[in-house]
Image (cartoon, rainbow, N blue to C red; front, side):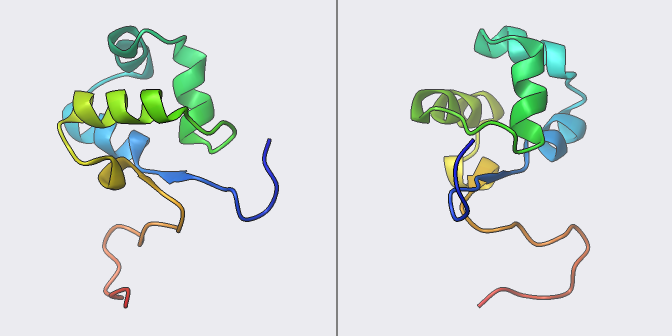
Length: 82
């Protein structure tokens, strides 16, 4: 795993839940093992650029909606980031 400052945050679980897609379904669509999706969701594994772009394409959103180098605001948070 990477060192501090290399953490990649993601919204994979949120995007899956919004669309009613299981880890296994997402993994099959992306051609990866379903455990890989779990590792990605938990931040235990950072995706390759290719996989990140394919995942964004799958969800039909910009890659920045799925992945970030800074934490995403919590859902329902009233705080606005500067």
